[in-house]
Length: 217
Image (cartoon, rainbow, N blue to C red; front, side, top):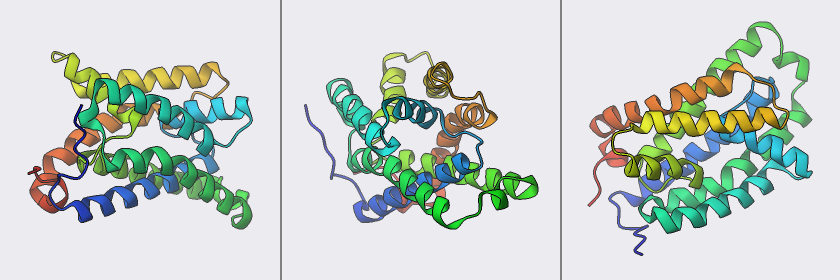
């Protein structure tokens, strides 16, 4: 089993893009939860599980990501890279950090009503979807959960990645709802938008940002 983590063009630029993307994902998720609009399907599920277990979402997500990481190593090692390690360790803890920051510094009523809430929703959703798409399309490895649709689509050549990703996401939404999460618009929007966003960034990113999204050596 060969895991070629470092053999990539423009490794420094791609690594920086991955780290910034992951931090922005956690930042966006913290705002989505702050205004009580939900989040991406995987985080919605993990938030409910972590609440049931009485631990932070960062700790629980790291545990689950480690289990999925082992499965990805067994069935799709080509999806493992620096981006895998950055994402599986940082998203949950970044979410915890920014959530704690807002709790200490931002008045809840100032951001959860009227136009402010809608503006935060639009910006946070845009930041998360684009950041997630960039981190996946940089090709430095996918997070364990994000690698699962890639692996499944490789074994199901007649089924598009978009459809496989949507099925995985809606499964997470269903599990989250069974554990007590509210069925909200944001998780459904992300389930519908993330697959196409990844494909769109991959299509145009390599043309306009070849240093980050160009072909590997």
